[in-house]
Image 1: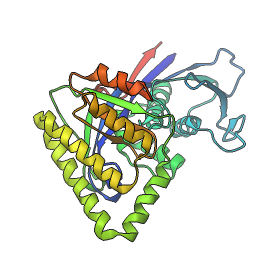
Image 2: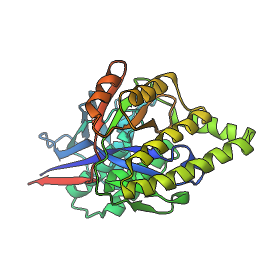
Image 3: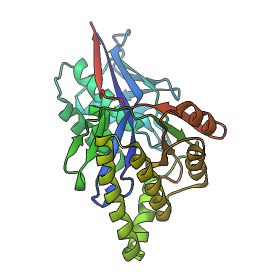
Length: 326
């Protein structure tokens, strides 16, 4: 039996950094996916789990009995393998299998690559082991894995990767509400080779808030109101309002100090070549921007690619999907 699962990446439209302080957020699943394929090893005497990642190329073995990855990384930098390892433990995977990962989402760009791989791995491994998990259970297990690997993680990445579409995350991450919209959302992602350090950026905002609460708290409150207004703009198909709110939100992110020269250049390049709105997506300091580009996708992608990396995306209405070949 061969089981293949795919799960989409994500982009945060609104709520970066403010979500840390209990504010709402809006995220979209994008049509760039992680694929995880599980099958029995040809060599039946091999009791390990062989993992092959296509992009970037990587090949390791996982020994669940000894609780380790072989060969071990001296700097303990296993990257995506840590998510696969802990995902397999969630479903009591047995040895003697081969896992192939094909990732169409850039790593370290704030686009939910680790969540997509985690969700796809849990979905594929559970089906391979004939464990019937609901999507709610897959999302919960995947969030637990991200917490174990990262120490802290919002449930928004694993939720959007599991369910797809557009999700509004209510205050204090209490409820993930799907937003039903009946119009296309043409987006461009631009990303730099320089990754942002989420932990350091979140800490820098925390320190600013501690030092200047009377300044930073109103910024976070404004981000909340932007997110609430953006929710209405999405539901009513108001393109101009959505673009305006993205641009205003970018100014507030800049005020928090999470911008960079590379990101700023991409934000303004996108606007100057036709994007209605553009802003950082994710923690900032490197990573990615997102631009809303009705009728201007190709033009904006071309302009961004002159100096950085870019690709167009649309909303992926489908979350995790599983296919079984007997």
